[in-house]
Image (cartoon, rainbow, N blue to C red; front, side, top):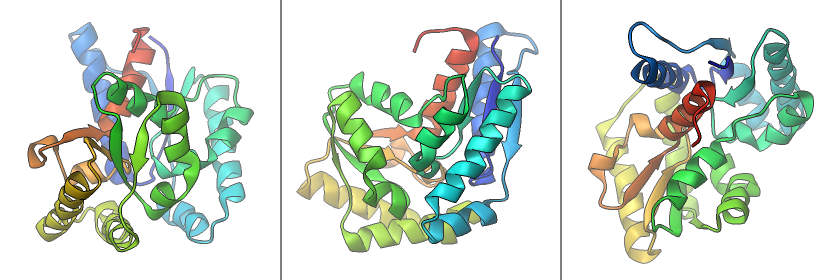
Length: 234
């Protein structure tokens, strides 16, 4: 089994879900008391959030790239960045390491590609929804048409993530707001599926809440990482 290096804490609310899913996947595959071989670097999200808010992506990339290289030095055979938004600096991380970065867009794109869905809604932080790094990768690598919510809806979702979900607050009223956005996009934008493009969103919304297909990136990415660790093809 290969050793995975996890860059987490962005936020830890979803990072612990990564560890749980990866370990459960390994146990299911190998049985008994088997668990994953993980090296975890968990950040103080307050530090990372400040860099996001000031759009200092270069500094953020340097921080994450340095830590990814540290994980490789102590034995990680692949790096898992446990967040959607910080894949904004994936190139900096990949430049700093010689082992694979298991990219969240690939885990998500392959899952969508396995269905007949071609037009998807992307929900996430304002950075993920508004900057091109995520949408363009899905379009270029997986030939998907990616639609984002309106400006007002983007503000609502972003605020729910930072004011509630990353702080462990699960608000039923916020769930209804997100479901209203998805419902409108299903009707008016003809989306066939929804990407939970922030690792915390699936703490709030599940497939059972929706009439369209749901692609929860934390779950998809963690299972993708577990398969890599086990030497299984995705």
